[in-house]
Length: 237
Image (cartoon, rainbow, N blue to C red; front, side, top):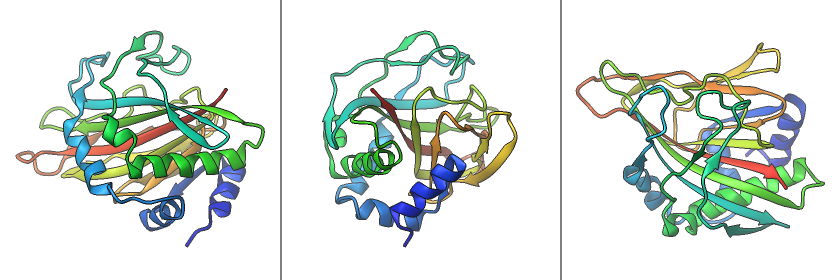
């Protein structure tokens, strides 16, 4: 099993870590229970359509929640919009985007709380001066149809304007591609990894690297095709 210290070293050295499912699951289980993981994964079936898509696409569904982490203690904040500046998101930045909230039983459930605890430990070790974090969790489903690719990052290679980002695969069905790519600040490629199995993950230090994901297409055009991920961002207060 990869120790959390090895992940910390990789992020500190390279600005990112691309982790296979078996390692991530072990790290999460060392942080807390995953008793409701099946209910957690099934909650992606209830995501609402993202109506803010500037490219006119109807392929993204999502829910959102904000949390505070203070000295390791996690508290859910009142529901609020997701906001990014145009500098970080030229496609969707500059507006307050209100998404449907992550369901209360999912937000307080074992799986998400364990994921947040893991992130708080990992990012707290990397940024030892941070006492308080603003945390956002995003459930994303990217759908692909014949004639309409699903674009996980329609804004292209980007940074999020936070300190750290976790991208965790929950499920993928009947799709091809969806490769996560990492570039340095001069846009030179550093690494790539296709999140293929539940718990495959990419973790980035946002100030040091750009990240993006290639579009997904259906393998069988007659069957449902989608990519489900959880994105968690941590920003120092």
